[in-house]
Image (cartoon, rainbow, N blue to C red; front, side):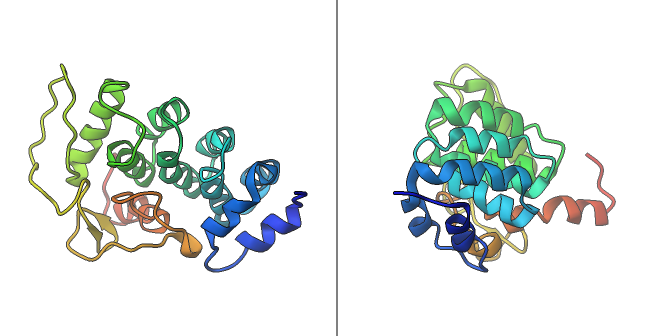
Length: 211
């Protein structure tokens, strides 16, 4: 099936894309998604990055998104990395869990710790340990890391593998949204939507918090 850039744009450049349907474009859409990730405006680029994670062979596009200068695009890369295989996801999340933007770090940590994540404490103990450290800051449910001592002062069940998200912040008491920017669906249970995560850094700046 021939897929054009216009075909991809038509599916993504709407308020609420149908990502499952769009993923049916298959690998033929990946060159166009790469172009949108690197040249599109941030919202469209973030949608392209998320969609790439749902298509077989999309890891390279997601990796490109993870290196974007735009935090929203990096957040999308972190959120969709949970859909990748372990060997694709681990280097992407290893970089994003130490990102300079809080929203990116939290989204990456949630992707690492998600029940459906291909990343495991056995295959990547240092990455899981780092995700747990980020999780402590935001009261995410920790994952046990063999042979590594990690303190979880907040601990406690938060209603799911990673706890609910609400009031625009992970671990809050509100109801978790099922969609992200432009209707972007959650990559997996417990992975916060991109639009909420992208607000974290702004909230911290307004509150005078420094990392």
